[in-house]
Structure formats: C-alpha cells, structure tokens
Amino acid sequence: MFNLILFGPPGSGKGTQSEKLISKYGLKHLSTGDLLRSEIAGQTPLGLEARNFMDKGQLVPDEVVIGMISSALDANPEAAGFLFDGFPRTEAQAEALDKLLKLKKTGIHLMLALDVSEEELVSRLLNRGKTSGRSDDNNETVIRARIAEYHKKTSAVADYYKKFDKVKQVKGEGSIDEIFAALCKEVDRKSGK
Ligand code: B4P
Image (cartoon, rainbow, N blue to C red; front, side):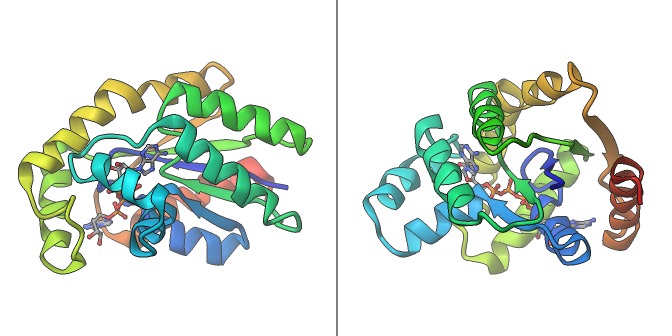
C-alpha cells in the first residue's frame, strides 16, 4: 500500500494534480473538499453545518472531517493506496489520520507540498470563481481568509510530517504538466519505481 498526501494552500493545484496522480498510480482519491461539497449538494445536516464555515473561508470542525475520512477508509478496504487531498489540514487531523492508518497496519509514506505565491493563489481562485459556481471562490475577502486560515492552522501540518522526514517541497508554479512531472519524480523515488 502507498499512501500519499498532496499538501498546499488553497488554489495551489491539489485538486488538479490529484486527478493526474490517481490515474497514473491507481490510488483512491480522498478529497475532503469534494466530500464536503457533495454533502452540501445533497443538503444533508452535515453539509448544512459545513457550508456555514466554508462560505466564510474557515475550516470545518475537525470531528466532522475526521469522521468523513474514517468512513471513506472503511468503505475502500481493497484500495492499493490513498491520495489524501486537502486533508489533514490541522495537527489534530494529522494525529487522527495516523491512528486510523495504524489500525489498518499502514501509514503515510510521502507528503508532497506545493509552493505557490499568495498573489498567484488569489488570481487562480478568482479565475476559477468565474465558472466554478463555488461561493468560496468568487469573493477576494473570502479567498484571503482561506489563505490566512492556512497560515494559522494548516501550514504546521507540514512541520508535523517533517519530523518523520516525509515531506518533499515541489514548485507549484509553471505548467500543469511540468508540475506533474516534478511530483511523479518524487513519488517514483519514494516508491522505488
Ligand atoms: P478544497 O476543496 O480542499 O479546495 P482548495 O484548497 O480551494 O483548492 P485546490 O488546491 O484543490 O484547488 P486547485 O489548486 O486544484 O477546500 C475548500 C474548503 O473546504 C476549505 O476552505 C474548507 O472550508 C473546507 N475543507 C476542506 N477540507 C477540509 C479539512 N480537512 N478540514 C477542514 N475544512 C476543510 O485549483 C485552483 C485553480 O487553480 C483551478 O482553477 C485550477 O485550474 C488552477 N490551477 C491549478 N494548477 C494550475 C497551474 N499550474 N497554473 C495555473 N492555474 C492552475
């Protein structure tokens, strides 16, 4: 089993690169952003609660996302490995993920962290907001709040995995194919391909 975290600030290309990585490496994609948006679309109680936080650019409470990931892991016992996209976003989520994977006698093998400047992030998200219909993408104040939330609560998650020597920084600016090639190089190196 090979378990990968794709890490980076909002708009750094996690969703974009995840699609390419799962198809190349046969991993199961677990995106907490996608799972939450599907709960919102289904107007479930969880979705209605999550929406209040997401519309303000804030993180959804840890217990909500940890519960979602735990169910998704249980629902995929045959997976060859998982690609975690947008999770973990706090140290509490990272510790919970370690415990869940330990129960399955596995762990995180690699965290790939995308580096992108703040102005590029804002410009990409505003651009996506023109067509995505996502309420958290079409307002610059909300976008900047998401980036601030990242610096306050999420960037420390990379330090958590650095302690175990699992983090590789990758330049997240350039063409989508160039960035994908740089990510694949790190996965191949780590998985011994
Ligand atoms: P997410 O759905 O995780 O989304 P994201 O961080 O906004 O974006 P992502 O990084 O995947 O986007 P991408 O760069 O691919 O989170 C949304 C919200 O959900 C959070 O704010 C939070 O409220 C909540 N949430 C999710 N997970 C949570 C958790 N674990 N705990 C608590 N709350 C949680 O794409 C951005 C744009 O850039 C696209 O338009 C893309 O086309 C473009 N792009 C990508 N690569 C590019 C490149 N190389 N050059 C130019 N443009 C590029």
